[in-house]
Length: 113
Image (tube, rainbow, N blue to C red; front, side, top):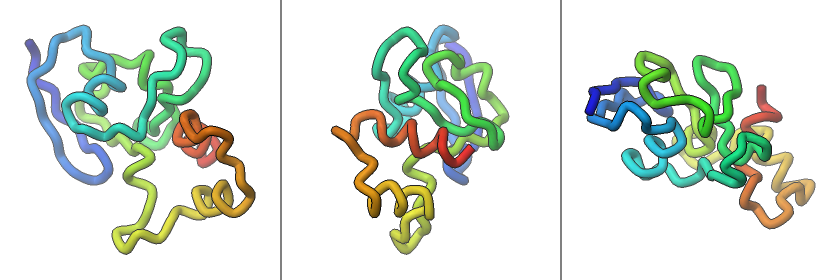
């Protein structure tokens, strides 16, 4: 096990993880941020996209230890504290760009970048 620390959605977080833990697993299983999805297990679909230091990245291809010290932004961190959606989220909602919704968080994060 290794200790990882990073900032996720503006909050400092730390945990002890297996060195093979993917960032997507860390976000979903350790932090319970389930808006980031695993859609394909082959790094093709983009359902797992988050921002790492301001750049979109497929979190299924990044180890949690590689993200140590980074600023991570997930779909949960986009909306304002008062619940106001990010403009991109609002446009997806307004224009019904949701399909089934499973990959929408990754599409929103990709579109913002």
